[in-house]
Amino acid sequence: MKKRYLYSLLFGIPGLFVAGILSILVFGGVMGILWVYVFGDNPWPPLIETIVSILFVLVALVLWVGSLLLGYFIGRRLEKDPTMNWSHVLISGGLTFVFILFIVFQQWSVGNLGPKSDSVVCSDFCAQHGYSGSGMQPETSFHRMCSCFDDSGNEVMTIPLDIIATGIPR
Image (cartoon, rainbow, N blue to C red; front, side, top):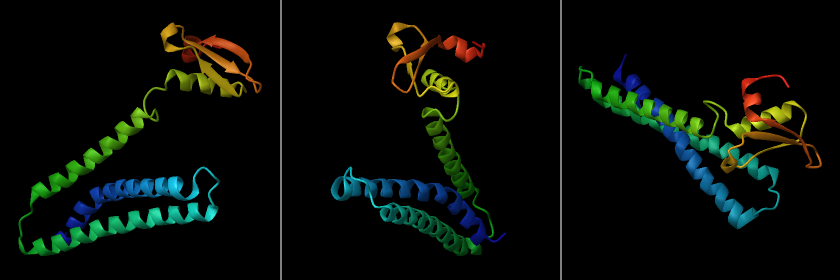
């Protein structure tokens, strides 16, 4: 494989993560500015949301293609040297691994990976049984109880969380 294509991959894979992160940061700022200074808490026009979404994807693609092209041109320049520089491969692999770890840790911290929190277990239980709301006892009470509420906000059922978590039918 020619170095120009190898370096496109070496720059492109971590570049995909960098492009995504930079796009999120830039458009988070853009949406914040639009919210604070332009539209506020009023309903936003649907056209603005569509335009910002399309621009987000375009900026991410432009940044990613830029990293691919940068890798291509650097690889083309290094084709004169027949030896492979393994430190470049290790740096690219390490960066990719670090970005994947950041994604996994972030998803773990928000509860998408790993065990469900007590409040999520309670909420899922109440939703399964047709109740519109759920609540937990304060953590300082040391009682792990789940309360389900009807549409009026009245407490309909209170059940120990241990029974829900173990799956013992009620």
